[in-house]
Length: 99
Figure 1 (cartoon, rainbow, N blue to C red):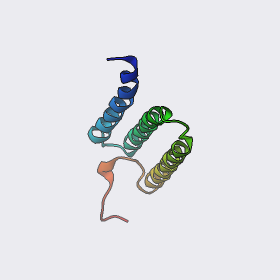
Figure 2: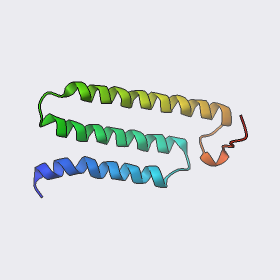
Figure 3: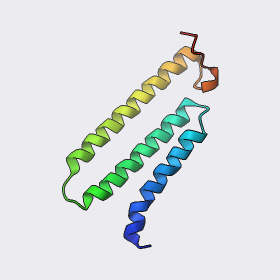
């Protein structure tokens, strides 16, 4: 495998690792949010590698990075809200019947 092939495959392997952590570690909301952010950064890395070879496609990358930052801010706001109402971020302590 050449260096260029490894440069394309490493972000994809990292996305799969982030997806595995997202699926397997579901006890706390913070760990799931961190794995989602890890996947978004690796997707950004992969898109920058792929679009960098095509030319100057930086506007789409900036739009994607803006959406990833908004997703992170929304997840952090959700985490703060859940910790204030329930006292912790464990999924086992949540109840659908409780407001």
